[in-house]
Image (tube, helix red, strand yellow):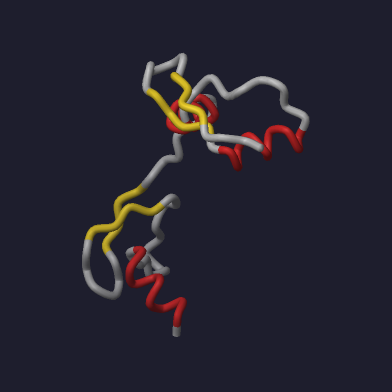
Length: 91
């Protein structure tokens, strides 16, 4: 019923594929217009109004590597890099 279509992004001019599955989804939701922007441009436009999250430098308490965290580290609490944090979470 649906076939993949190649469309051109109106923001960056790149070609992108509007898949048959996406077309079916659009039809189920009642959308009548095809997308005009590629995924990258849609994501950039969606996130444009969001404020950038402030990141803080820290040293991992487990391995000693530099880490960036989205909170202000305190001296009385250990901070872990994402790898060490994931290992601790698994245990």
